[in-house]
Length: 374
Image (cartoon, rainbow, N blue to C red):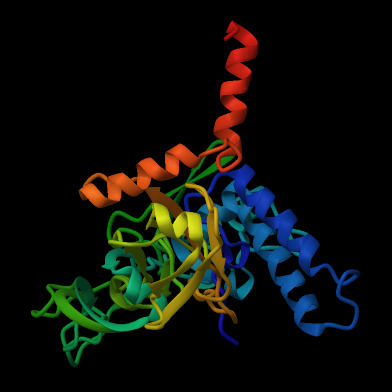
């Protein structure tokens, strides 16, 4: 079964503080609690998964181990994994140190070597609002440390193999007894790898990795927003000497649109209308990102700042169904260039005004009269 990233399970960034992680956990736990979803096996499974994720990330030592090694830090009975130390069989005082810090520091029983997971990478991609609406398939090129092909990432010359370090016995750590305490430090011979290479690979000089440019296909789903993060598992830097690779995180940036502004799944636009259309009513056509021309009815007497909503003409819901709305704000435009005849007609209209045509203006001046007199 594929292992899901703990941070993704809790829907937080890897840099999130303890308070943010706790808040996210409580919110998800409430949503997925079996009591609120009786009989739903998916909810029960997710509830168990987010509990395991929070159990790890709330503990500084476990979180540090997870950030360095991922799920590999907790495999094969790793001491830092979720669940604590309740099932460990402790021996002497030095065994306690080994169980608590062995896996985290790269040592541990059975000659386990220091797991140096590859670094995660970040790629910033800018797309247009139209591309965010429809989604797109993109091709990106990144420079990355990848496994050396001749030695298959081992670092040893093809035809040879790395051998267990004789200094540390393959543990990657050496111990020294100092009175009551046992002090552990990185092996000076293998530098924590637990192995030594007598004949390094000439292509990578024993590193097991080489720099190369990699081309990747990325599917951008419809509905992505500014800051959306897409994770490509295993596409980060290769780990040292065959260790697991890191992940590639693609951060989406949406460029400004000439007409629309976005807030979640809602699209906003400002539309100027003439004073006659505002007074008498009418219709306007607004081109949507979906390629359709949406006809909106302007009610007679509409004022500047009023909004007209077109249901289902907004942005798609990311990884869901349906669309948001399109909201048009009306700006009544006062004419600036009038012909003699137009001025004449407006003068006739002014002569016929009774005050009832513009109740807000009449009310305002009535208040002024009440304050200062005629």
